[in-house]
Length: 132
Image (cartoon, rainbow, N blue to C red; front, side, top):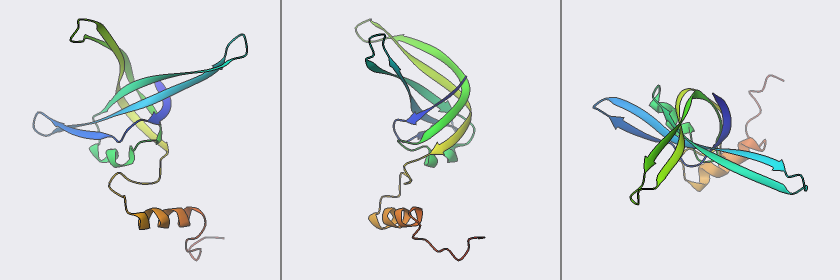
């Protein structure tokens, strides 16, 4: 399945059975539509993603980043403590394409670095290396 959405929280890397690592993150999928009466509505579905290929990608999978995910999606069910059946969507991710992010890596919290990134994005960077 192929889908595009926003990451809801910074990705987390976990080590499983010694040296195997998995990157876990959740993607929100929004659907906007109008009812027959013309009322605007919005639905959101959340997909819990597991990426087993490259744990180094986790630094780019930050809250708010827009990603395109390709992988195997399936519904997962379980019973909670009260015995009620719960369900969610899970995806074994094959590929990740990053379309946009919030511009700050999870461990990059200094105000100076944020201001520097904004200045470069706004055209305040060094123009000497531009080819035109």
